[in-house]
Length: 400
Image 1: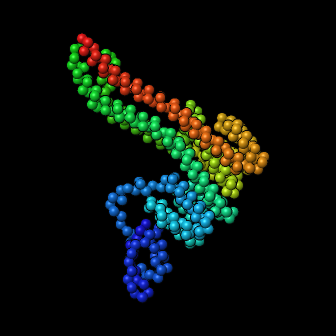
Image 2: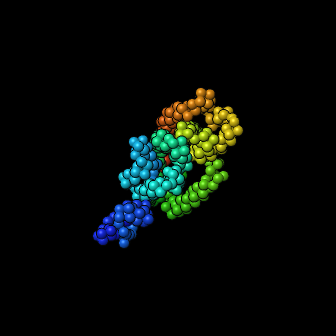
Image 3: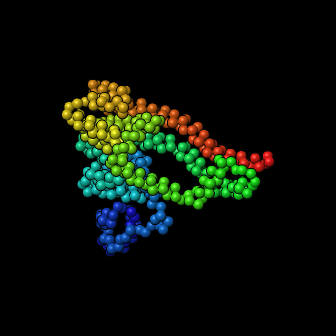
């Protein structure tokens, strides 16, 4: 946030200006350090158009990736943490993230640990992020930990971007189909229906069905739309419950094509997060607890929590995961078993990550290769069927 201030120096000179900080208290502290006695202080007013663009200030995963990588580089260069945070805060363009970074720097300067300062903003920094930083502080290897963390977030961002990009083309096809149907139903079919119904001769049943459906949608189209909206809202609310999320996550793994892709994503996320946490020095039981919360699927979460309990009792990770062949592939278990025997679990897990990322790339290409012709055929059948139902009686009329 930006604040306008006015104050006096020890010599009585009046000074005024604008300063950037997370709170009024922070501004007062900064100005007093510079020998200025504050007489006026208020938050700078933003232009009216800026207030309506808060959605553009939302902190994205890409912002967090950039922040983590820059912080890791600066800390590795032996720049003090507080100075690094202030430098990054001054360079960030998004106001919300800038304020949070500056506030964190003030907390650290006031004596709080970095992990404790980050924990004040759980909506931005995940339990995984905070756990990694805390591990680096305890082990005295914060520089290495930040480097591990930055690399992990970059790979996680790549995985999420890959998944989202795979959905863009199908979404565009569905959108185009919806727009075409809307235009035909609103403009083309009403005009053609007047010609067909006023003409002599019998109208084919398929054409009458299309005309009646079009008339119903123009008059009562809001009814099915409202019904679908209500059902979608109720389904989403049920999904947010523990029972609903559990049912959804278990059944999505059984859907052809989509299920295997979700499994690859979960296995990659599991191996990636666990490897990063172990490399950062976190005990395996604690690392499994953190991974369970961020793996992204309730079915995998339950298994990981069971694995944590049995590992705490002395069993190995591979001996527990082998009991769930539907969710964990033999190669996944064999690689972990090799890592446990050689004492290089984190390195073996990272090898799995590289392997599964290639598998995800292949799966994405295969899904797109299957979806593209399917959606194009669907669009052609729907639109072509409508056009055929209109042209057939017109052709008969012309023949007569």
